[in-house]
Length: 507
Image 1: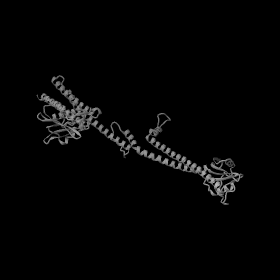
Image 2: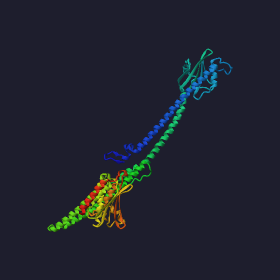
Image 3: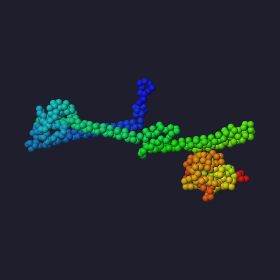
């Protein structure tokens, strides 16, 4: 703990504060388990108690009814075992009934005659000498069920059967000490309560251990988030397991991997951009320092050089902006478009780049979800790249092929080609192994970014066995239902457009 700035005040760390403990996921989880377990055990115990009480009450009622029924049958149709004939008086009936019956535990049988109480030979209890109970049961003139609160044994449920024999009214009574019967149930419930408390404590302990184990990745996630800064995202959670929390940790680790990769890419881009921009700035500054203001020729030459370098810087900045935007969701404006039509329109623009042997290979009709402006930009970049390494007698051709899952756009030339060792490197930023004429080294990187934004790929191969370069731009294709072949009118319009442009370029 740390002391507050005010004297006499102690500031408790946040992770030990009661509000934090009660608000934590672990506390809520364990508290919920503890509450639900307590309610479940309490509900089960209460239900068992009520059911058992009802069962005891029903068993007592059945026993009372059975005893009264047996006595009634004996008194009306039975014979005296001593004489073999009918019972002579009420005492003989009660005595015979008591001799034939063995009371259950917590049950007693009594016979009341005028001035006499008859009990079983092994009977006993507090009721036979209880004058209040005697007065209550002997006042009955009809078969009666009732309850009595015994001073010594608590609640008593009884059944009384009044009958007349030999001119005397007598009463046969069977009674149950219900509180004594319930006392055994109370002992059982007490044992259940103790066992339930132990089970509840064990369940809460297990829930706490499980919560710690399950939520450990979240603690690691919190600690990892606290250590991450805008310059260091190398820390990882490294959770194990295959549950939902572990999957969350793996997802966050993957996000951190992507974030670190993106930050590294941004750092490299800034470093590369700073390096590339530093050169023209140094060139301009050096010439301005050496320029003779009085020499008109020197001023004019320096001005032309500065403008040329500034133009190159402007193109570099523009290309960097395109690369930066390529990762944004709004970089593309996609829609279903006829790719062969886009290739033809781009080809008509490319023929004006420089006098070359331009050719348009047979185009296979195909439809893809693309941004036609970005695809045009990529194809023109490839064409400009080909122009930079070819001469007037070299051929540069555009083409389009429909593959099963992709549509392939390509630009091929008869230039020097690309060595296999450089075929991956040339698509990186500021790599000018086969760069465009502007010299920024970003042209092919922009093509790769446009392909990646479409979910496609870009590659380069040899155009023929004799050399040359073949740049392949593969983009995801839409189903064949959307790729209806062009009509004769569309083919005719494209052919006319091609002829007009050729006449304008070549005369």
